[in-house]
Image (cartoon, rainbow, N blue to C red):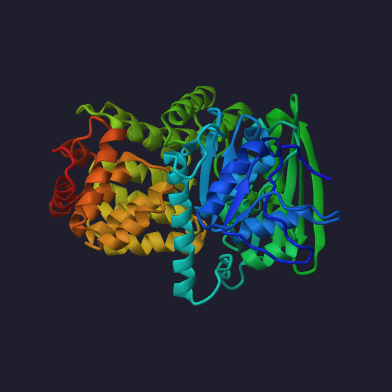
Length: 562
């Protein structure tokens, strides 16, 4: 029986008992099958194998089959239509592919994309022109060929088939655990942000305990929306304990269920339901954390839990606004504008909410970087917000990390280093803090040290894949004149941004590939019509003038406007 009329389906007929793993996995709504047929034909005509719409064998574990094919695919084509965007199966597979860096989305009928996937470049297709000679279809085929070639190179370099990354072993005497994404049981996909936010906060709170080695959000969220084998999860993430649960929100009441599983034995150590008014959601989160900590280490006292946790807002509404804001794509202007509105609302409701101040500071500093005049009002506002965040919540590492970034933009390098170090001291297992420290080292003129911090972020979280991370990684390599490696890092960025195009153009120019340099320079100017090298460099806070001069010269070599 099919679970969802808008489910993903897949591929050429597979004889019972045979195993066939294809290059390309196609995710789409079954109702759109007629329009997907010519698309699959075009892909197969290009010599690529496709898994889509298999013969369903009665009794077959279809979820597992889909999962196996999705896991080994080199590329995932998601076909967005007004029908498929409503499918949680299609959205889930799109998110997994995006996290792995293998998503190639296409769209029909100007479908309204899921908000967290709008930042990824999407190819608009037309039913009337689906032959392989169509420029849009050619763009799709180039993208697929590039991903497949990348996998082949990786396999050739390894001399073996790729396997799922395994989390590093925890330090001695630390209890390894993960928190799987809590299931949204509200019947409203728009409430996914809430159950995801609850999960993320439980991960954050548990990570504060040094005797717990808690796997990161991105490591856990790869299992989102899928039926999982707990022992398989434990092996892949190298954990002993697993937390799972669900969130049901009906009117003004919230029910959170949570259970702790010993993955070695399969035993459920405890399970509990928390049923409260919406206003008590923060109290429920604290109860979940206290119960887990108290169960794993019986000697831990409640007073210690209270001492270790960050300052929480008194208002559930303010907390929800921050969750909503954090779930939006900030690289997208509309997403950033909405996030700004929500954070301002949160601060108006709860003026002492440190995290809201810190996140709004980041958005204000990003606005300043995009402005074309010499006004520093937005940067000054960002600094005031970030300072206030630290004053309000001295136990939240993110507040210090954001203050460090704003200080760097103000060329207060000593303060930037000081605050970044404090962030790492508070939470040394936070990959974001490691990457932020790398950015500080980059602009301090210590690119080799920056690389160490960037690599450390990946060691903590093998699935860490933020666009700004790869951009900064590439920029550090550029400072070391390792342009080929820099390009490889920049190619990890999903979607296109004028800053990435500018840096790529500079690398190609230094390598003598002027055709590619000019193409990337043109793409940069198309995305940012008022681009000028001079203004761009005023937003690049290099401490060492020689580093700034090197980048400016590289941009001009590529033909970017002075």
